[in-house]
Image (cartoon, rainbow, N blue to C red; front, side, top):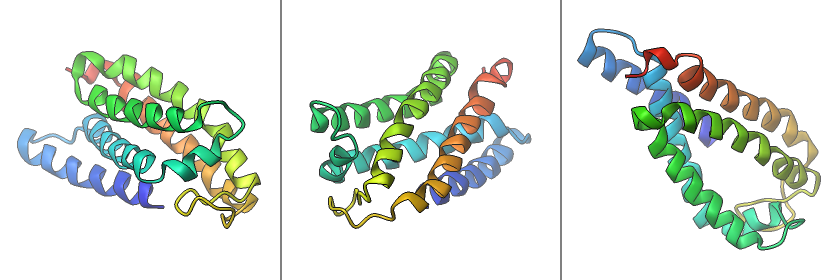
Length: 154
């Protein structure tokens, strides 16, 4: 839920600030800024809740290392969204990244993993009714802010 608050809050703020500066509504730019802010937030979680996130991928080797690497990847993606020459590539890679993350979220839900407390008190399978649409929203958000509107990116 926090990710949605950040995504939509930063989007609205960026949209208004860009409007004041450019006298135009730049939806794609505001979308990239908002996604970058959200990625910074989620990257921080990779370091703050590394143990719980490692539980989400316990079916893989080197879980803690993967958690840290993906946190760094999220920080790099946030920067890439804001660098015009990197936006298109970053958008494509982010979509793949979000697709690759989905099995970890499904595993965590099926096993009641609570990433913040690193135990098995999570919301369970019902969480997927929120998480899967959320993942689709992230994919569509990145698509519209980077790939679909690439001619508008300067």
